[in-house]
Length: 341
Image 1 (cartoon, one colour):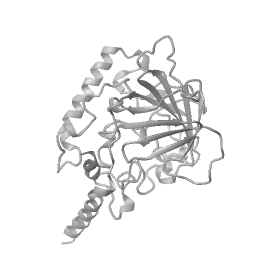
Image 2 (tube, rainbow, N blue to C red):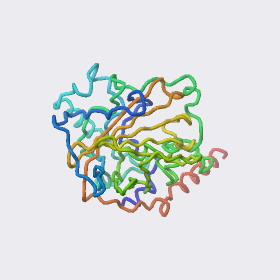
Image 3 (cartoon, one colour):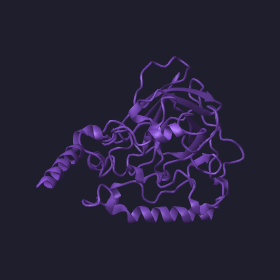
Image 4 (cartoon, rainbow, N blue to C red):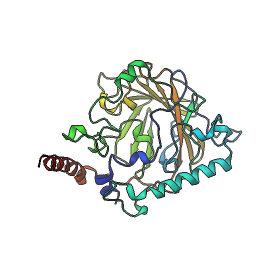
């Protein structure tokens, strides 16, 4: 069923998972400390098991399905509160409201006219969110302002990884549709964002390397644990290099293709991930966005990954069933023909 869904829903409903505004936040420098979980961590730091070669062992199946619905930035209704100041009861109320909205919008998934299938096709209902919002730095929970240069740049470009191909957008050619619509990539960090389905991740380690395999689009990121030179190429997922800082896996990614840069960032964009195991079945994941040509300061957001040994990665046969692309383009031509009559 997930394979079939990829054909008709791709590119139109995944952003239901993160109610992101045009902006969100983190901190300065490349080695920014990981965002502190919104729910208080134990006083004694968790010590993960070790691989046979001595690295912290974070292998296995993970999911961020319970982070569905968390807004990127702090909701205005929460005033001056910090993430840590949101009470458990208050968070519970927010989660209930988010899940009610998700259920109410179910009929619009995949298109207002065609409607959606039964809710059991999707994974974003009844999420158990770990926090009230994602941006942890700046402390106000807001993405820093765009630079003047970036303001001129916003909205440009055809068929970007996570946008440019939404319902009602241009459809003169397949190039107008997003890379996601075309079953090519969600880009990075789009691939780490919770979605309405396909939220499984597999982490595999070997001496000197970590591989992360994504269920949706089925990409695999190979992360060498060294500081080797980066090739003069720009893949859609960028080029990653990792290292261990204590029990935290730090991954710095650069060299992003123009059409897959996060939020239309500049070629200077550097994205710093941190995977910090905080419990036997929990990883605190954060991302620091560093791009002085796009934002006035670095910023960070994060979420939680939960281990789920039974959450196997389903085949994502997007290309084999991607009738959406043909139908989008043929419908656009039909509309044009009707307007000429």
